[in-house]
Image (cartoon, rainbow, N blue to C red; front, side):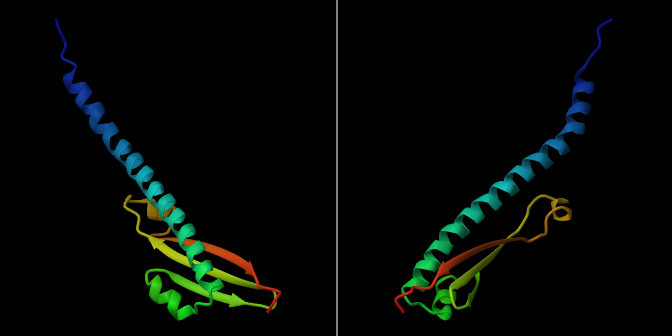
Length: 115
């Protein structure tokens, strides 16, 4: 008697497919987060350059309207905090990470001593 294993393979596939898709979506989400963090780092270097060239906060906010930029100064340092948010696509990942996921980059630059 010959048994047909096609039904068993189909059931195994149906059981594994949601787990596989969840892992795939998580990989995509972490790739998007990594890309957004890298982009935010590059934009922070541009913002530091703008500040060192004398741009004020309003100019920076009009140049980068999708970012939250905060500048605090003390006697020695200027601290620039840049925040952006990434929407997650994986269902259930918002229980582990916040949705939208908050990315923050902080740059600390010293004041020129020639001023």
